[in-house]
Every structure is written in structure tokens, then in C-alpha cells.
Image (cartoon, rainbow, N blue to C red; front, side, top):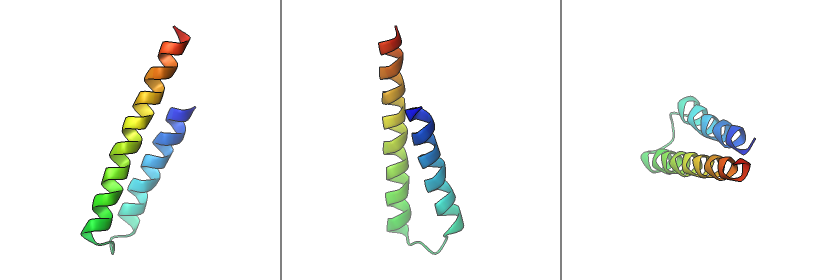
Length: 54
């Protein structure tokens, strides 16, 4: 469930970047960094859930 939520957040951030090209470079950089952080958090949450199920 958390992975789906975080995946949705990543996709939303990506869509926002595509639909708002007027953002400056620093804003786009921050969005990319947030996307990487969210992807990492989603992977970590997924791994933790798999470990709990085992």
C-alpha cells in the first residue's frame, strides 16, 4: 500500500514537471531530488514489508 502511494507521489511530481515547464532549473532539480528520495523510501518500505511477511 505504501509503495503504491509513494509511486503515485513520484508520478505526480513527474507530471507536475511536464505540465509546468516554466519552472526554473533549481525547482526542477529539487523535484528530481524529491523523486529520487521518494523512490528510495518506497523501495525501503517495500523491503521492510517483505521482511515482516517472511
